[in-house]
Amino acid sequence: MITRADVDQAAARIAGLTRRTPILEADTGPFPGPVWFKCEFMQHTGTFKARGALNRILASKERRELRPEVGVVVASGGNAGLANAYAAAQLSVPATVFVPESAPAVKVRKLEAIGATVVQGGAEYAVAYEAAIAHAAETGAVYCHAYDQPEIAAGAGTVGSELLEQLDRVDTVLVAVGGGGLMAGIAAAIEGHAKVVAVEPETAPTLHAALAAGRPVDVDVSGIAADSLGARRIGEIGFAVAVRAGVESVLVSDGDIVAARSRLWDEYRLVVEHGAAAAFAALHSGAYVPGPGERVVVILCGANTDPATL
Image 1: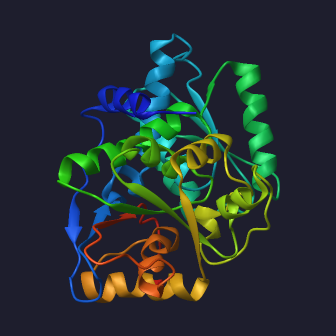
Image 2: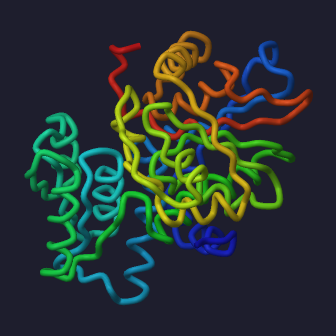
């Protein structure tokens, strides 16, 4: 469980190491009230995840858990791997990243270019995860989870506290959900100020299924946004904060996501990954309909994508 106090502590800890990402006001015509885009895809490594990675590693250093000779370890061939490798490089400690054999070569090259040691093995993420946990136990490296650690989620939540500094009033924040770290952080940061609406692909409804079941449950994962929203269950932190803060979940189709991503490019020249476009898809498709004058912020959380697919 995390609170606004955890987010504020994270903000102080990572100050000067992350970018204060801009907000862009959307055209007013299509919506019943003002809409802004929080352009977090402009963060270091192209996603919000650098915030949580820096907070996790710095907090470990404060507790004297971080051993400079072994550094950190993470299981992820995607955005979490890139973010933690970047954060480790900024703090001059080594990073080992375990990825499945199916990890795209371009992402492996990016990880290596940042300076990470990349270990490939196994057909699925679960194999990489087990290998990373074993590596942490054997070497003493600090394990950095992709989303379900308090410091990771609190760091991600600085997106929300920053947003409250940028706008006088916010009613609703739309955020895409996979494992739920970003959603949990933002919900904790803005609790009492605005509501959070979680947007999930129909083909990966981790929070939606958990809210229906009353607990985190495994779901089948597929679809166009599975590379970034492909967690098989919501994290314990994400679920706990969602219940406490009254986060609601709406679902969008692959077609909705593709259409929203195309519109962001066609009308605003914003290039984002499909997972980030999911948040806007809720508005674009009508899965979420704001009330008259409702002030809505859409979190565009990542841009690690191939522009040729637009």
